[in-house]
Length: 196
Image (cartoon, rainbow, N blue to C red; front, side):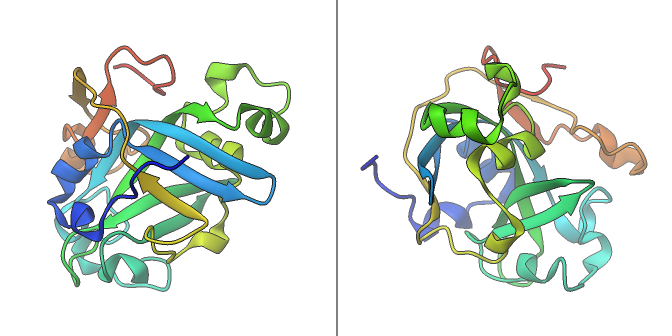
């Protein structure tokens, strides 16, 4: 895959715009098993200090959230149950915001994905944030990684003409924040985790 890697300036756009703009871009992981590429088809924006659903709500600064206070275009990984979740740090330095990558459509490396997610139906291999990290072999070791460098980066991809917005998923105890329309997805893509 020789498509153009996204410049650092791409990640400097406001978080909501970044969440939309990431749709259609290709997430590339040069894993030791081989290269895996997936088109990003679903994202969620988290607006940091002002967003009750964000880990950094109220400016909460911990070892876990520290990377979000830094430069945009870095990786924020965290664990939820047995899953690693992948986020792209956004917002200016000191403004702890991020975009969760919720789902991808495999483009390259399907045999490796099958090896990482054996016995699972194709559409169920990458249609959720914990599923896609297992499929791509993304671990907590990538916490703080710059998306300007190997082994994990994002490149130019496809224009998505039909983007839908809706409430984020799995954040029931966050007051009004649970209803914010900060989830973006390709309307007709079968790899989206949830359509409504």
